[in-house]
Length: 303
Ligand SMILES: *Cc1c(COP(=O)(O)O)cnc(C)c1O
Image 1 (cartoon, rainbow, N blue to C red):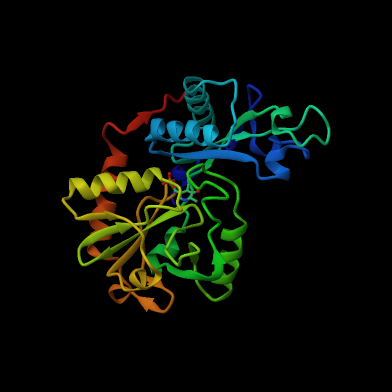
Image 2: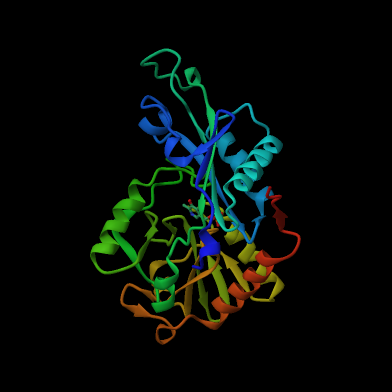
C-alpha cells in the first residue's frame, strides 16, 4: 500500500459525536457483548467513493428486522452519518462498519429482550483486505474445516450479518495451525458454506458456482452474479459438495474487503499450478472496473 491509501484517521460515530476510534466504547452489560446480540454491515470506500452503499444499507435494514432490532436513525440519516464520518477521517480507501446492538436492559437481569435499548454506532478504519495482498500474490491456501460446522441457519440466520464467529474462529485455529491462510466451513450435510467474512465461488467446466444457502448474501457475491451474467458465463447458485469443490478448476472468494480474490490451494489440491485462474481474473477485472467508475459508486464530499 502506498501512503495515500492509509492516510487519515480511524474514527467512530457514537451518540451524535465523531470521536477517535480508541475512545468508542460500549457497556459491559450490553447484550451485543454478553450475547453477541448485535448486527452490522460493512461498506467499502474506494478512491473517495462508497461502492454499493445503498445495497449495504438495505441489507443492514433487513438484518435488523430479522433480529428484531430497531434504532431511531432512518436509513437516510445513517447514510448521512457514514458520509460525514468518512469525510472527517480523510480516508479515501476505507472499511466503514455500522452496527446496531441490542443494548443494556432497563430492568437489571431481565431476560426480556424488549427491555433493552437498541443503539446505533459506526466506525471507519483504513481499507481491509480479508486476505492480505501479499498472501494473494504468493497464492492463498484455504482449508475446508474438519469437524467444525457452520452454525445451522435454523439457529442463527446467516442472512443477518452477525458476530457469531465461534465456529469460524475455531475453524481458523485449525487452518492456521496446519499452515493454511484461511478456512471455509461446511454445513451438517457436508456442503460448502462460507469463511471468515467472505463468500466462496468455484469454477467448474466453465460454470460459475456458488452456494445457495447457509450463507450471508454478500454484496460482492451479488456483484459477481451480475458480472457473470454480463460476461455470459453460465451460472449456478446451488449446493456444492466438498468433493465437487475440491474438483473445481478455480476457486475464489468474495468480500467487500478485497473484491473477488483468487484461492490457489484448497486442502492438498492445487489449482492451475498455483496461479489464479482465467475466469476468476476476468471477473476480478470487471469488478475493479465497476468499483472504479459507474453508477454503483456514491462519491464522498471531503472538506
Ligand atoms: C460480510 C460477510 C461476507 C461478505 O459480504 P460482502 O457484502 O461481500 O462484503 C460473507 N460472509 C460473511 C459471514 C460475512 O460476514
